[in-house]
Image (tube, rainbow, N blue to C red; front, top):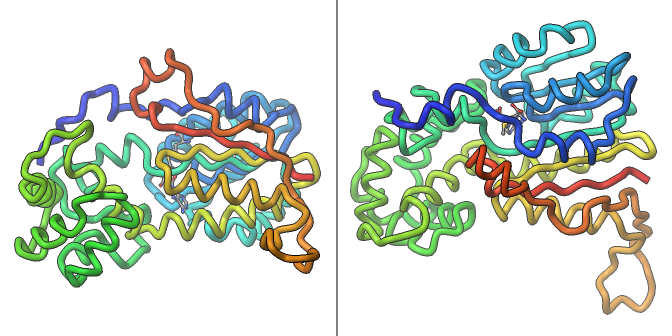
Length: 314
Ligand SMILES: C[S@@+](CC[C@H](N)C(=O)[O-])C[C@H]1O[C@@H](n2cnc3c(N)ncnc32)[C@H](O)[C@@H]1O
């Protein structure tokens, strides 16, 4: 098994848009914050440094291994930090159990970390030869191997289309079905590349298929939609919600959620009078999505597709 990612992408995970996260979370000394995606602890550390003295952080990650790295990195703030290995789809219950409500801010930095991408056992990257796994947590039962080898061709094509927005989804699904069993990331990447005829693309031909599988394995869009609601529930008045998305599917969910929760009425436009009784709970604090600076993109390629949106609890 050979990892061929450049060292800069594997040995550290530079927190994306860290200055913007601090600004839009409006981190204050003594504040209480939830980092729903602790990863290597980069954002958590920045939050704790700026929330001192007296600040508290509840850190969540589905990946128990990530929390080990974060725990070491956050050691100087051990007394102000509670780390828990869980899925953020249970955000409200986690906060209540920890007696951590209301909070001043909730952060989501979605997707996977550089550590996970480079891990030779996890199967997130087509550049690292590994078994097809892609689970954020070992406690999950469905792996990418199960989907690739057991889904019907039609079902697989739909998944690659919906979660990868891959125009060649049908051709790719047919090729995968014909190549079974497919055991590893590099086998799958080769099947996908052959199916797309080695077409010259801006991105590797397997990028969208791998994204689709990862989203499906972890039900990433379902977890996000559910957790955003709960984030608003656990925030006190004036609390800040900050979300960094890395592809249009998750960014669309965040955008639509913030738009909807910023309106008093969500009845269809043709309704003669309001019947929904919906009340705005958020005020957007970013105009559209905020993008990383050119300087950050040059220093950290992973940041190039980041889009940050923030809103304040009314
Ligand atoms: C981009 S990384 C976060 C990096 C982190 N902000 C830092 O500065 O190091 C995303 C992390 O979120 C975790 N994650 C993704 N979806 C999750 C979910 N539904 N519940 C809990 N953790 C999740 C992943 O395991 C990964 O460690």
